Image 1 (tube, rainbow, N blue to C red):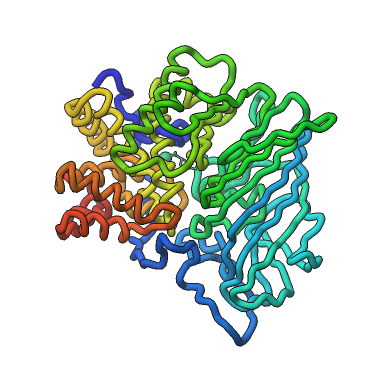
Image 2: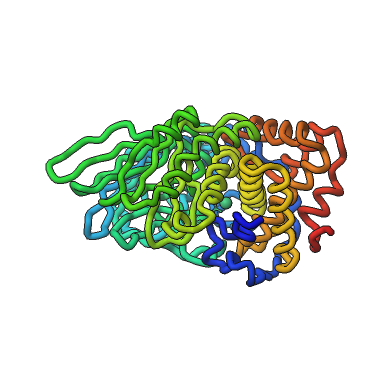
Length: 496
Ligand code: TRP
Ligand code: ZN
C-alpha cells in the first residue's frame, strides 16, 4: 500500500544502520547458533533464576560471573538478587561525570565474593555494608571480596566512580552502544542489550530487575530526564539536580538518562488525556506540525495497544529526541529516538513499535537474549495492528503481503534462532511478527488477543522464554500448536 514505506522491514530502530531500510539489501547474516531448548528457569513471581537456590548453611564460595545467558555467558552474575539501584550522577559541561551508586541486594548463596558487571571509569571508593572492601577488575567484571555474606542476607554496595562516558562495542549490535554525546552536546543512554554496565555497575541482565532512582545534577541551563517520574528539581548556586524515580522493576539495560541544554521536558495534554497517563516528551523546539501530530497520536496508540494487550504496564510514558543516533530504543517509560527516526516517513510506526515494547521487552522481559523475537517480533506486530486500526483490515493484509514479499527476497532466517552477533536483524523483527500473524490466522481474533493479554498479565514484571509463550497460546486455544511454531519460528525457509 502506497502510503506506507514499502517495507518497514528492519527500518524500525536499527534498520538505518543495518541498511535493510532500502528494502534492497538482503541481510543474510548466517545464524551460527543452535536452536535454544527453552528451559523454564524463569517465572513471573521472582526475578531470581531458579538455578540459584538459597543455601542456609555451609561453605562460602564465589558468586558466578554470569547469570546463565546462553548467548552472553558473562552478562549478569550469580549469587544475589538486586532490589534497588540508587544512582547519583553529576554531569559537567566538559563531558566528565562523577557518580555515586548504592545497590541494594540480597544474597541467594553464602558469598565469599561476588561480581558486578562494570567496564570503564575510575573507581574511587567501594564499600559493602559501609565497610571499604577490596575489588579487582577484569574486562567487564568487577570482582568484590573477600566478603562473608550469608545466603538470605540483605547487603548494600556503595561506590563512587568518575570518568568520561563513551559508547562501547557490543557483540550483539553492528555499532557501539551505551552513553552517547550528541551533536548539540546532548547526553543520552541507549544500552540494549549489554551496555548498562558501561555507565553503572550492575547485575546486567533482564533476569535481575530492580527499582531505580536517579539524582542527576547538571549545570545551569541544562535539564535532565530519566526513567519514571520527575519527583523533584532542586536548584543549587550553579547547578540543578533532577530527581527521577522508576518505581516498577526494570532491567538494567532499559535505564537511561538524557541531559540537554535544548530539549524541553513537557506533557502532551492531548496525548495524556487519551492515554489516561501522563505522556511527557523531551523534544527539540523545531519539530514540524506533522511530527507533533504523530506524537499527539501516542494517546490513541496507547488505547489501541491496551485493547490488544491489556493495560499499559507503567504509570507514564514519553520519548526523548536526540541527535547523532539513527535508531530508537524502548527505555522503560522513556524511549529515546534519534532525530533520523523522527524525520523518517515511518516515524509514526517507530512510535507505535517503541510503545509496544513497554509491554513486550520492558514489562515482560526475556530470560535469555536468544529469545529476542519475543520483544522485536511482538513490537513489529504492533505496527501491523496500528495499520489495521487506522486503515482497516485490507490494509493490514496488504502490509503483511508486502513485508512477506520482502522477507522472501531477503531470505530471512528463522527468528527463533538469531545470530548472537546480530541479535536485532530483520528476520527477528519481520519473521517474528509473522509468527503472530500466523497464530492469529490459526486461532482467530478472540483467542489470539486473549492469548496476548493472558501472557502479558501472567508475566508482567517477570521473565519469559519462548516456551512460556507457546504454553499460553496452547492453553488459551486448547490446540497443539507445535507445528505452527516449528514452521514459523524455527523453520529455515519462510513458509509459502
Ligand atoms: N530494541 C530496539 C528496537 O526498538 C533496537 C535496538 C537494540 C537498539 N539495541 C539498540 C536501538 C541500541 C538503539 C541502541 O527495535
Ligand atoms: Zn524493537
